[in-house]
Image (tube, rainbow over all chains, first blue to last red; front, top):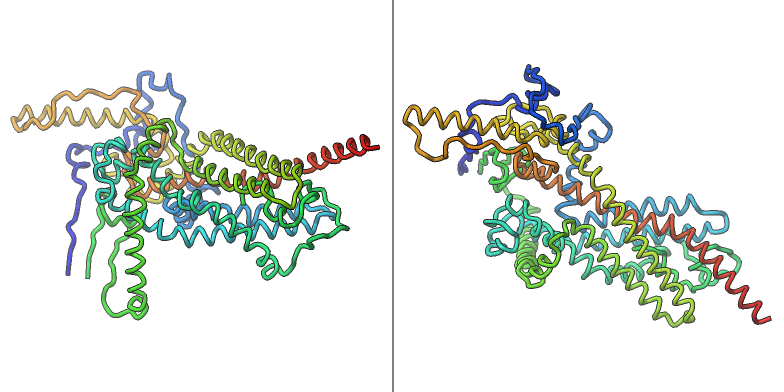
Length: 248
Length: 285
């Protein structure tokens, strides 16, 4: 049986034997739960600064309930630790749900088929982007976690570069250069290296997905359908597949 | 069997698990884990390799030095990396359009301009909206942190600061100098007492000065790093920032511009094209 040593954070207690019933609350008599009711006695502290906002009804508003949900906090973890996967997830929601829904809602009788095609196109590209990014980035995210967990092993000697006295987790969290270059390192494999191949793969996989998943195909040279889309009006199918405006 | 006791020093604890006691089960045999063990080991080795050969090299590269030197004023890399990724993809679409032999020159040019316009409007719009939302989002993030403190009283550091209501988090941040000065008063009193009874060992200088009123926090991230020192909360606060930027860039690049802006733009383009065709026909006649 192995028992790890217990680390008490004695530095916090060492110098302060008196427990403050929240000094700030005491001074400002706000939201007291300690029995104090002392009015503000500071000397002009409020002159230069606007009064700080007290969160009314904290924990009970709709937004608070979302913030307190375990799933939301797990999602935030993904956004910070697996930024590329999160980016693909946003694309999945926006391009896979919002965009097709709006395409269909805005579709008129004349361009209904084109809107369906555009909707299917958006869903396909979002799903492919998410799947590819998730698979490729999983080992990169795991590797980055190792760097974060043991920065001394990987980053020793870079104190000057990051502007810290020594390499340590909390010190690095406070270092803007470290945060900047880390985010860049996290996103380069997907955004720069994988960006173009992923876009090409998306283009290549859209026709079979349309055919086999959605069960229909856009007619290549239909003459009878009038549509208002400038791009589609003057170009052939192949090019249109590559152009929808914006990022896929 | 391992027993690991959790302490409240969250940044020094190597196995921080968000306040839950962690007792790993190692007894018995597990068919699945035995079956996949070699795979996990290989995967673990592979991630080690990436950590060594990609991340470690990247941090130590001349590019990293050059980049950090040139971008001292830049803070949010998530937005810039999103923009760079979008620029590359848009650039690829533009080049492919220009190289398409099935189109005549004029059409290629028009489409390429359309691609570039989409990219330019999206990029400018995304940066603009991201910047405009920054202050509001800081407030939202502070409220999020207050909710976190509501559910995790340990993170309030009650033993040091006494019990306080997270609803007053903004005040706690803004009037931080009051707490700080009270702690300094307390220290001075202790030092004076120890000097008086002859037990003072000179570890600290007597008569520590009060901090100025400017010692306050506007940003919940800094406040957490300096005062609350909660690692999990730091990750969540950073996650809130990334969430905002990715959502704004995703919405603008993939929804607002393509759906809401490009459709009217296409109609306008079609109208202009029809007009120019009519003019050309009139000239021919």
